Length: 210
Image 1 (tube, helix red, strand yellow):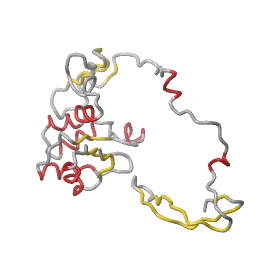
Image 2: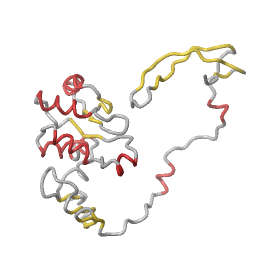
Image 3: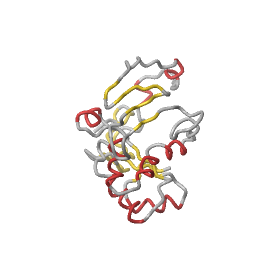
Image 4: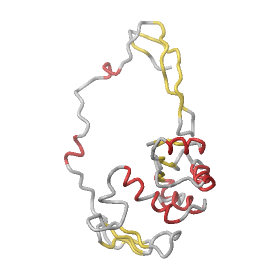
């Protein structure tokens, strides 16, 4: 898959290679999604290998700015003129199939999790009712149950197992003087970055920050 597709011209070549295109709109990438959706519409590209994706959204954007979570992306796709059924599939079934989870989530059917949104129309949000695991949890924008505290299995806290190490183990070793290194060139306000090289000072056998 391609998680960081940002240019409309890159869509078709990736589809030809069988990749899933993750179409991202999030904090730091505002305005990236509409041109991608326009290309799908104007070129008549198939949407079965496209997934609406949110990444690195801040709580302020989700709550205070009214962007919501997935609904904001769905609304952008609907405004772009894509068929509603395809839009909702891009936000549910397509990514579930890509990650081989469609037997559990992403669609309605026997044996799947009964997580369901009931709306009065394809472009109407918030939904009239929200069901989680077959249980009504929200209605007309209001919670109707108490949200339980999170219970993480112990295994969740044991997924990264590293030996003990100290700061000296993270040092980049080089001869004193200076060293030319590969670095990441970051642009403020932009989620994308570039590979670059820079000359860095070296003291006591370790590369120093600039």
